[in-house]
Length: 295
Ligand code: ASP
Image 1 (spheres, protein in one colour):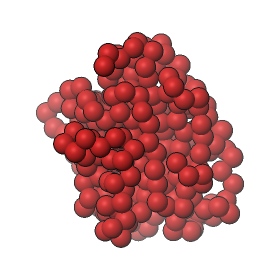
Image 2: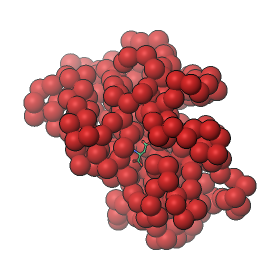
Image 3: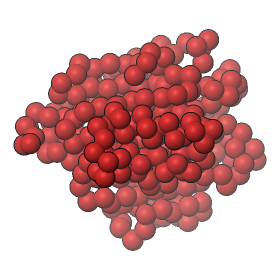
């Protein structure tokens, strides 16, 4: 099948797990804006990679999610951030893990991808690389980070706020990006699925995936790559593959959700937590913003 130049698809998420008792109107409005911004970018021929990085950067700076500005400190009081990005056509990937005070961890991940020598840099080395790359850092962490735990989201199920974006651009290229402050009250040095290529993030020329949820289970299930494998070797549709991969997370005892777009512009955004903040649009579907509704 030949892709028309009008085929595109875009999904963003602001994390699996939401508390029905909390008011998410601000996040919903923000997700709506993001989708419209993303549509404009893709329709003006921006690449999927540039689009997903730009949207995740926006989510990192707004403080509404547990990523970037909204990240909670770990048990030692430090904010440690994970992010990754992957480009489908080239299968080039970049990731940073447990990086401190980078203003945009996803941009650091993108620089790792562009640099090409490594796929993942962690801790102080990731920070040094980001500084050498000229990226911005938070000068006053105490003043910058918004601690959601202090703002009432104590419910463990509301404790996921990872952000992510997946896109198919007008040239038929797929890309995925994910960024997080990790789980609330995590141990120092704990790294979840978000920067692990194949677990929290994946893109090839079949599908682009960004996951959110209890990261340890997504790593053990290899979730993001599992979706591609089910489609490529098993002939599953995007929806079947996404549902089956998430069922594996549940079988292991975890929960969460994911967003995925395939090369035909189909979209999937299943979850098995208490809701997932997400929004989507494509050449064949008007923009939608969802939190608690079924997929
Ligand atoms: N998956 C993230 C992690 O385990 C958390 C989340 O999605 O909220 O670090």
